[in-house]
Amino acid sequence: MNTLKQGDKAPNFEAFDEQGNTVKLSDFIGQKLVVFFYPKANTPTCTVEACNLSDNYKSLTDAGYAILGVSADNQKKQSNFKKKFNFPYPLLADVDREVIEAFGVWGEKKFMGRTYDGIHRITFVIDENGIISKVIDNVKAKEHADQILTD
Image (spheres, rainbow, N blue to C red):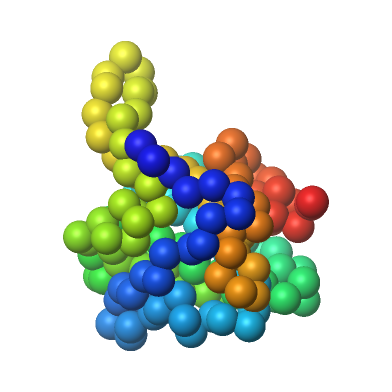
């Protein structure tokens, strides 16, 4: 796994959100962007993480951040996840894993003695110029917004 680091230029991604709209990095030039990667929609920890960001959405946007969630789920699963919890931010349906692999968050994982490939729960904070200013690779789902807002 070759995860991007602080100081790296964010990849110029393009993907569909849960509604089929095209979302690109260039849509966010001039503002700060949080891109959080999560393994699977509607699973317990992913739900807690996404809800924490939703619950703290005003604080995050007041601090100048736009937010994007990304997983390899299809548009329908992302749409259902967003509707179920009323998330105020887009969820990218990166079925082909182009964005996931561009950020380097796909790789070997271990869970309950099993080894498999999957999405690592990692968040990238990107500055107004498209440079990664922070990488959170020890995401605490219940405190994620605080992790983003704390320097």
